[in-house]
Length: 285
Image (cartoon, rainbow, N blue to C red; front, side, top):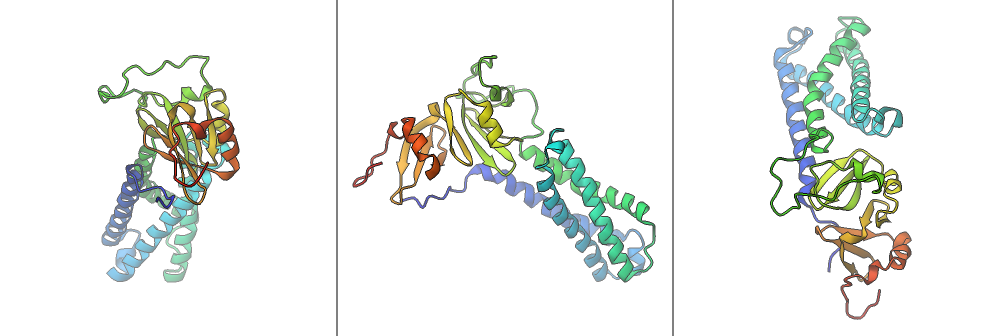
């Protein structure tokens, strides 16, 4: 009997790779700055205190950056620029917070600070750009926001080479699907402020809210079955019900989608629970 928890799958591996590479980059940046000792830190601090100085500031910047990137991607005025608005705002604000942190540290350990606030901000902004550029690029690429607008020249042979054409009569959301995702749309899965699109040709991430996507998919032959999932009716292969009453839809790509209790009646009314039903002895759906 399954415990209802989604297994660890390959779709989670890009995030692990991104964050692992980022930690390595942050550690390398702190070490390089410690060895070089810019802004007089080589002369004023021994190696240990210098490592603590730069390592602490780099760690502080990483924490601030992570917090701000989550906030800025939730501001519609910024996301109107796609990822560029939130990314730009995050870097500018991170540099501002870091400037205050550096000023506070300098005031305690080397009063007075060697430069004015405006000049210090410029220095901190440059360091922030250098340290955040690579991890930001890797994360955006892993989330599918920097993918090429052209389809792969050699798609897998087992996938349809000619996906159904997108016409004006199809729901508006279909125009948002990246060209390299061939085949039909199977499901949408909410991941923080992104949507993971599941199609016959694979999966990718899109910066969009689920409720907006569902609105654009009106008439597409699917429904929202959970606060985090929308499913196409044609994608359903079977239904599973666990002993505790939880219901899961199994899609043709193997995705196991939970049905929330609040949406179970609508799913039943649509006849989905009668499709390819997996019987469980001693219980009825």
